[in-house]
Length: 549
Image 1 (cartoon, rainbow, N blue to C red):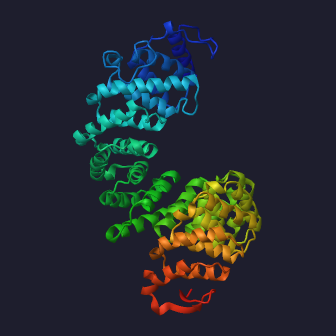
Image 2 (image 1 turned 180 degrees about the vertical axis):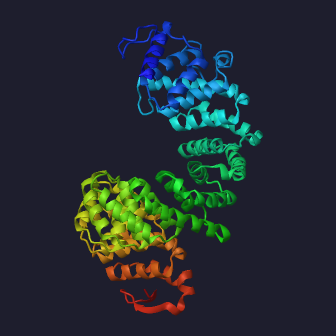
Image 3 (image 1 turned 90 degrees about the horizontal axis):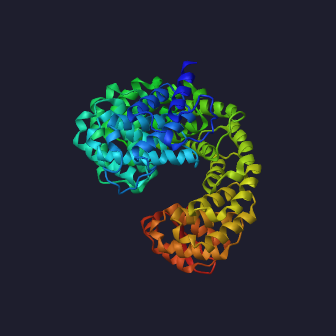
């Protein structure tokens, strides 16, 4: 149609070739520079705004703009001054439109092709021009530019980091200009994205940016749409910014607009509230109302949720301690159906079964379906997802011997990537369901000793590990010696149950650990729970005391 004709004519004009030219034809550098930066910005913006992705058009525009921005050199060094780069050709509106357009159409964002490399050079050059001209940007231009750099993932370069820093200063000085909900939300999202992806990018300015933008958002909260509401609480949570007033304001507004949220926005918002520091008093009531409304809204359109979104929702409700049995029932039914059609990632699978197990919500048909899927994908499960999955099946009391066989095989192969908590949870799960896995227990013991991991085991991990080996009847003397030493060093961190299980394990296994038993008797937990202590004939003839289980 008309847009295809326009696209061909623009490309032909830039390259000084006919519209019939092959798509892979090389563009002579001497034939670039037909359009001004403003013309180019407007063309790209128009195509992006209408959602028309044209790789060929954006490629020839990249050559054109890169030549303008670097005065024909094709690249620009970080220490070049403003007189060398082409800042006189680009104003703030041009820069914002150009980078926004590339980000909007996701142009060459996933490859190491020459086009992608040129685009990166262009963004680097434009960031240096923007730094020089930063005071000329209005709030919308600034927000769109920062959003674009964060969206395309080019925020880690030195010039991009400097761009975010100088932008921070401008935002703080001109905070009164931020009165538009989308501008506020895009700016907060951009900073959260770059801080989350590159924690070293955090500067002293960034927390102050969130302070001023949070206050601006509260004043305009009634103008925020559902996507913007979700983005600002997600952003605050992502960077660890604590703003109870903002979260209260969002709770009230989001509850009114709950059916306007997309499934992704709803999942992201609930995740943000689940991750934020515990909320008490009036704020807790607002949060409860929001979570109740979100659950009901999600149930009504449960089939619109992608697996990861649904998994994240369930995780968030459990993490928040908010009961939502109807949501869990609906999610189980939907997931059981979709497992036959849609591929679930290992992370989604492990998070989902973990949520049901942690909530104590029975979903046998879902667990059966997930087991069949997980067995086929077990080769791509990592240590965390293997550990969480077998823990969840054990915690739920759901038998899945074939799953445990497959998990054992791949856990052995990846055992040296398991953290101390992963190891403890895994052997605890196998011992609890009495699923024999001697090779796995050998591998876990050898890896823990080889990597000197026992020093990093906390009291619960030590207790669970030695309990599991004893329960499974699997001898591991070196592991028990190392665990004993680690337990002694942190004995006052053991609670009564952990001490009881640990002493039982050593006694039942017949593994002498007199120094550990002496430490137990002198521990704070032992002295503060005398009424719960029972005498026990120690295996070496001594008398010691343990807690009742």
